[in-house]
Image (cartoon, rainbow, N blue to C red; front, side, top):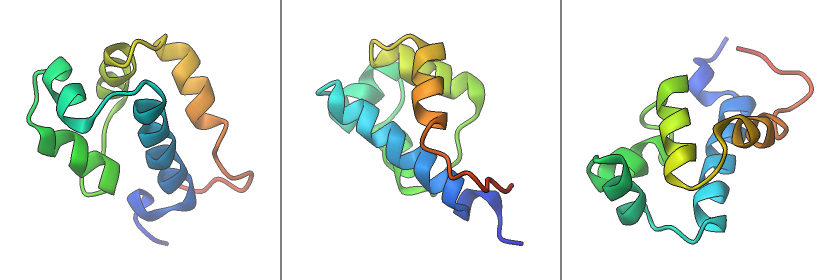
Amino acid sequence: MPKSVFTDAYTSFREALVALRKDAGVSQVELARRLGKPQQFVSRYELGIRRIDVVEFYAIASALGREPEAAFKLVTGTFPPDLQI
């Protein structure tokens, strides 16, 4: 079984996070500034080099001006029906 960072579900998760950022009209640099992190932090999780946890997801959604619970529902709605971890 592949590591979960490489599953279809995690790829969908990453793509949805990128879409949330772009829909908000926020660059990686600006999001990183809002999070108090270097730009590479955003780049690495968007590329799948670094995983994010639920606390980081909450902070990212908030920094994008989204209600974290609604953003989570939107992001998880992109998961494939045969989700595997």
